[in-house]
Length: 82
Image (cartoon, rainbow, N blue to C red; front, top):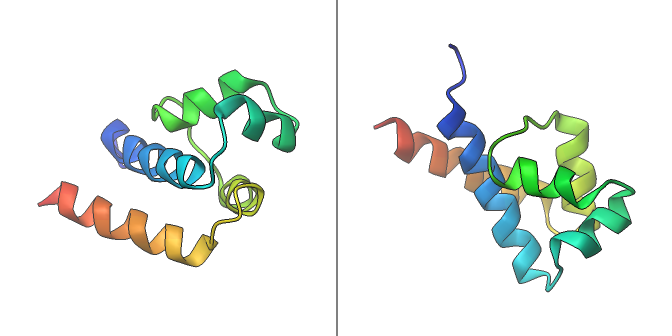
């Protein structure tokens, strides 16, 4: 497998932390994304892959800087591969 499931968990964890910093619950974020709460839960747990456009919409919905979040994910993923 090219992308390991643990790498999806890195993305989910970073977005969960950003959501919490924004003071939002999963349900609140899901409403703003017009998605079920289970959508947010599944990507935060690394059970669902996100494409780039979804990532950008989520970052926007939580008021996060998408570039900074991506860089944070990139650093965490590199640490995990060592």
